[in-house]
Length: 337
Image (tube, rainbow, N blue to C red; front, top):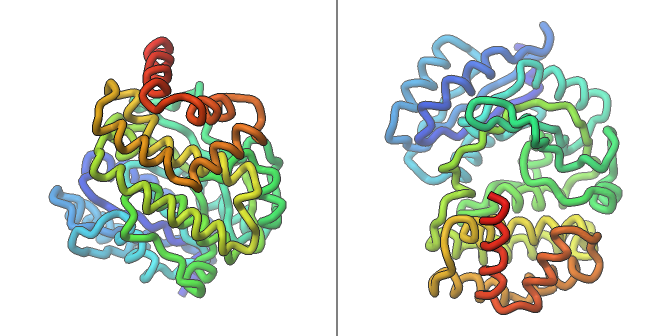
C-alpha cells in the first residue's frame, strides 16, 4: 500500500454546479510513483445531486473516499472528513474552489524540505471565471519563503492568515483540534488558532496551489442578522485560544489586526455595502462595539498599529457614534464603487 502524503477534505453542500471543476482538479493530482494523495468527499445532506456526482467520481478514481451524512453544517462535515483521513497532512478545500495541477507536488516538496506543522500557501483569485489579476491572495506577502517558529511568525506577519493552510494530521488528531460545530462564522480562523497552540513550526510558501472562486452569494457576503449575531461566540473562542496559547497572542499586532478583520467581515463590512443603517443593524453593531475585548483590539490597533486603513478605521470606530461611523463608511463605499 502506498504512503498517503496528503488528504484533501472537501465538504459538499448545494454546489453541484461548481463540484465538477473541483473534482477534475483532484483527478489531476500526482506526486510520484511511491506517494499517493487522497480525496475525502463529505456529502453534508445536500438536497441537490452532490452525492451522485461524488459517487460517480469515486467509481472512477480509487483515491476518493465518500462520506455521506445528514446535514449538520460545514464544520461537522470537515470534522467527519478528518476522522477518516489517512494522509500525513490534510488540506480543507471548499467544493466550489479547485486546485492547481501541481498543488500536491508543490506541497510535497515544501513539506519535505521544511517539515512544518502548518504550511501557508498563496492562491489565485477567480472572479467571473477568470483570474483576478488585480488581486493577490497572499496573507504573508511581507515574509520570505521558509520555516519559522510560531513566535517568530506571529511577530513578523502582518496579519494571521485565515484560509489556505495545510496541517500535519497527527498534530490535529493527537490534540483533538476540530472545527467548532457551534460556530456559524469565523470557524476557520478559530480552528487555526486552536492548532497554533500545539504547533512548533510554520512554513511560508508564496507558490500558488489553488484557485479561490469569489461568488456574489458566498456566505461571507450574505446579510443574515440571525447568523451574524453568533459573532459573539466566535469572539469568545478567539479570546479563549489567544489566552491559553503558548504565546500571549494579544500582545501582537498580527493577532489584533486579524481579530478586527474577522469581526468586521462578518458584521460591519457586509452591511455597509448592502444596506442603509437600520435599527436592527445598529443594535448588533452597538452590542459588538460594547464588548470589552473588541474595544481593547480597537485601542491596540489605533495606538500601536501601522498607519493605514486599519488604524484609521479603528480610530473612527472608537470616537464616532455607531450610526455616524456607519454612514461615513457607507458614503466612502458608494464613492468607490
